[in-house]
Amino acid sequence: MPEAAERTETDQLADDVIGLAQTYYKLTMVNAAKKSSTLIAWAGVWLKIASLWGLAVFFLGLAFAYWLGKKLNDPALGYLLTAALFVLLAVIVVLARKPIFNWIRNSIIRKIYE
Image (cartoon, rainbow, N blue to C red; front, side, top):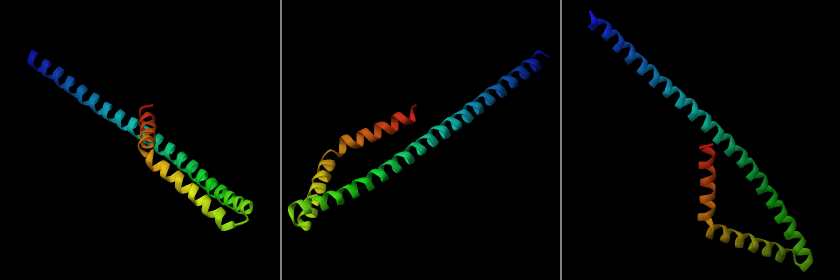
C-alpha cells in the first residue's frame, strides 16, 4: 500500500513540474510579446521622426540652394554647391557608418533588455 501512496505523490509532483514548466513557457511568451511590441512601437516612432527630419532637410536644402544661387547671381551654381555639400555629408556618413551602426544596434539591444 505505501507504494500506491508514493506513486500518487510522484504523479502529483510530476504534474506540478509539468504545470510549472508550462507556466514558465507562457510567461516567456508574454515577455517576448511585450518586448517585441515595445521594440516595434519604438522603431515606428523613430521611423516617423526620421521621415520628418528627412523632409525638413530636403526643403531646407532647397531653400539654401535658392538663397545661395541668389547670393551668387547664378541659381545653377547655388544648386550645384548645395548638392556638393550633401555629397560631402554623405561621404562623411559612409566613412563613419560603423560607429553609427554600433550606436543604433546598441540602442535597439538596450531597448530590448529594458
